[in-house]
Length: 335
Image (tube, rainbow, N blue to C red):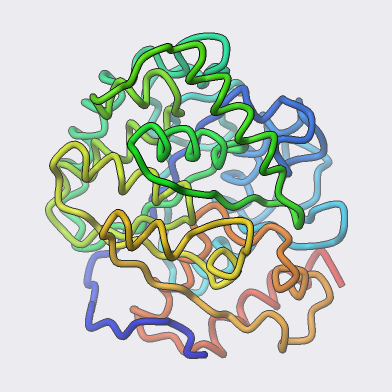
């Protein structure tokens, strides 16, 4: 397969990579999220991922940029590509439990709550409005690649997609997705709410996470080319944008999300009507024992890594240059 599944003629002159950071307390439910060393440790992942991308290493923790099985995290991939292209990223704190350790655009938001227990993002409308302002500000750039780091976010994505009427299945960072647990969460959320929701921002408020509100607001006002860098989580954002009457941006993710049999990435993209590009970095053929685990369904995507790789290609870097940069970076801390 080609490095990019669809041909593109985009020639960005002033691109920017944006990472939206947030938490949902759903990631602390044992077995629901594959991010971090454990349920409570998942809450620190956005901070550590941003730290790795910003400065090339994690310094506030003794954590390594690998999963317990030795698979390099998506943040490692994003860092390697941004290093290759010379692009300095912008991070947005949409709502975190732990304070970021690097410079961020802080929206003074709170972490998303457990939607089974109450409204998940009570200030969704404010965060959406802040996203609108950010979209206006960042229109000085002709291309935005917007990634996210929200452990547990595929479950909030499922809740939002289903609340919007889509028969969707979402991906997972785990090889074996906890589908039944995610469906049980959605069932419990609908039972709590007890009515059909129609307002997309109310759907975020009741069932989503802070990242969704900010990303959807940003898309409303941004005037350049927007790439939503992520899998089923960004499909949920695209569905919100559509429900708000906005112009649909393109979604970009990896082939590892597309090939996830537990998810419905391609079908959901068609149902929404959003164009989607899949990046195939060929991790099964480049001789790295950790990266090859993406091919068996571990991790798959995250922190905008698919979008970062596509950005490298749009800027004229060859697939070999992009994967070479990734191997060089991850080989500094893993076999």
